[in-house]
Length: 607
Image: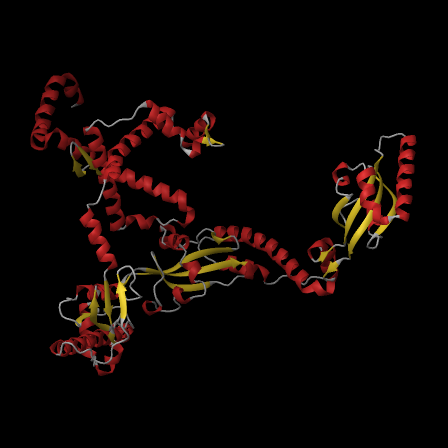
């Protein structure tokens, strides 16, 4: 067979042309290409089109951007909603229309405009100025060449030129602005009377047959989505603190001494000094001369301590403090060499020291204020010290338990029992975890996750995403360790997958009864309001009893009146006042416990 094809190639090519040509004739070359590539057009704009491939690429870029922005908290399911897909397609259409206009009218930008636009991008600047080095670094991190980036920027600037003139030249005619102003500032004086549905609930009768009929007609409203019954382990600060050993008194004392500055403020002295320099490398003769000079100054101060500041300004060789009369300010214990501190902290207020040798020369000190050590003794701080030591021990234990939890959950992939026993954790259970939410208690058999103390953990998108992954759903494996927060880790496992179902009548009959009661009570309230309005309209000019105080409202100052009632007041005819308008809803069938009042508004003045 292959030998025949090889030796009759011209004949076989003719056969292939005969077979393929009719397909081109039927669908056309473009249609054939789309058929082969499966890249169908979604929307055509002028000479171009948005294809399925364009949409998929845009959705992929959108997904990557949201993942980069939100990290592990991002839920890809949010992009799969009909509304999100519609919004994305509309944005592509909007852009395509602008591109079409820019192409048709030959919009472009000059090189100078492009350079100025790029130079103004803050990410490409250093200290407010464009930096070529920064520019190259940013492009390298993005994996782009300067040519590609500049072409993209040129295209964006061209598109901006399409819309910018529209925005700059847009204007509203004076009659339009006057009409808008009138609509916003017009006022109505109204009084409200409320017909509350609950006032009519006692007069409503709902039979078992009514409930059954509603149940049969509203199966979709009672549909419970597929959900999961899960087992899980939680490792948090509380678990890490459990079982810590007792802390000895000696360890508490040692911690207190090592961290004494956290409980005790050291003593301090408000200090002034006179310095006579005598560097370490100075000769013995120079040092002796410096000491003799310092001693002379000290003797002078014995007879005249009040002259310390003037003497310091004249004689101190510490240029920084000399101009302030030798003032050093507050000096705390532990901040100076020990040989200086022993002399300083022996002083009492307004006492001048003798000559004190220091590393840089000879000092004479004056203490103007002295504050003793103050704070908590060990006994006073004992509870605080113990809590801090336990917290540190718990932190270390948490890190150890977290490492062991990862190993045990991985090594025993189909059971949480080994990890629970090895770490002393409790295996917890919860039902009603759907892919997009936690189901309410009414829709769940057993302990509902929504009512659990761990509801926030179980409702975390990372937990729900893990539970609904193929490995966990099909093989009932343990998840990896999920970090809810730095001090809360969780491992989950699917215990049971509960298929989507309609709740049995006996489970929802109470809710249906409430819904029907609300609906019928609301209808009764509306009927009562409508009947009263007919009576009032027949007796125009008299405002009946039961209405609240008059209030003047406008669209910019509604005075707390809900929008529906406000708009009804402005719809009312001002030809004959008072005028009556009724507003109110029907009451949502599945909003259990709702009470929607019926309101009647007499408009008594219009302006």
